[in-house]
Amino acid sequence: MDAIVMDGKTLASGAVSAVRNIANPIQLARLVMDKTSHAYLTAEGANQFARSMGIEEVPQESLITEYSRMRWRKNLAPDANPVECQMGKAGTVGAVAVDLEGNLACATSTGGMLNKMEGRVGDTPIIGSGGYADNQSGAVSTTGHGETIMKITLARLILFHMEQGRSVEDASDLGLACMQSRLGGLGGVVTVDPQGHWAARFSSNYMSWAAAQRDIVHYGQYSGEHFTQSIN
Image (cartoon, rainbow, N blue to C red; front, side, top):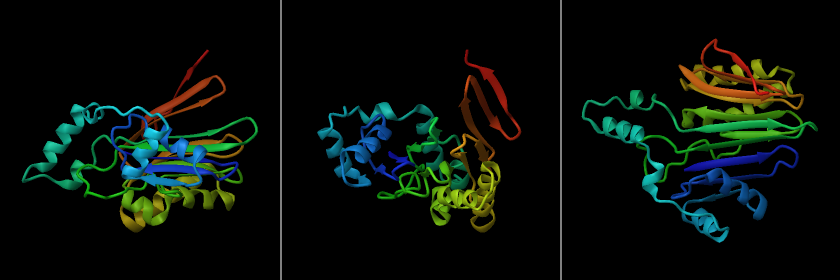
């Protein structure tokens, strides 16, 4: 499991990859940011750090859903289409936030790609790919095809467009369009700027998203959906 968290005020970040038996790797990434002088820990070193911080390890079986087992078995079949198997429901969760003073943050956590090679690390823990936050421009969390996200550093690319004056919607669409047109990669992002303008955009078939602003929750899943609900 991989995760990243970033503070837009200080540009401090923490990330972990290839951790095992950790129910909430984003908590471990936050500890890397807050309790070490490093930005990224991986594999057994990250697990050792987790134990030193008192993070409880859980049975690995408890982190594997029956849906994931089904996809894994399907992908092992002789006639399996690897691309089709990767298009099922993914396990990436991302968030961006802005406070009343314009301080920004992002966080992204994932279980990773199905049937990946031993040692493969995806986009999620890579700063500028899985996420990026900077008080001077905005915050982005990404999901999608990891290899193409890394090649164009999707989160940082979107913030570049925002720094050139683009809105959160336009910048997000431009980044996703670049990834699709140049590399054929699909994905989705949640983006926010220091003024609280936000966007949830995706080039994949769907992406479940939600945003809380004042006393209203905005949410959707498929293209064109935008529902609202009061939280009072």
